[in-house]
Image (cartoon, rainbow, N blue to C red):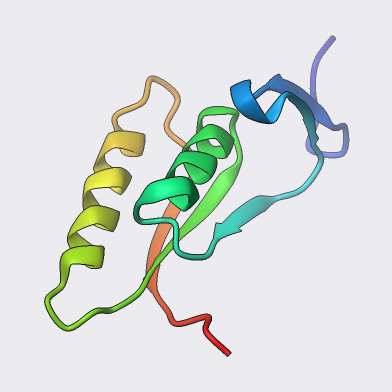
Length: 91
């Protein structure tokens, strides 16, 4: 069966179980490290387009982590569409 963008993509995304990817992408707030990075990586490996968001901290550590994760995801055999953007989602 050929998949189209209008049909959900069924993918096994590991610890998240099986999911139907019937959306255009994922925004991972705080996804440069830790749990956020792990979850965003699973979606990226499953074929979702992703926005990797990091906090623009004064020492630049979060940005470095985000760039490292982006490079890892870009090196996948079928790399996802990926954007790396600074942002602060705190209230």
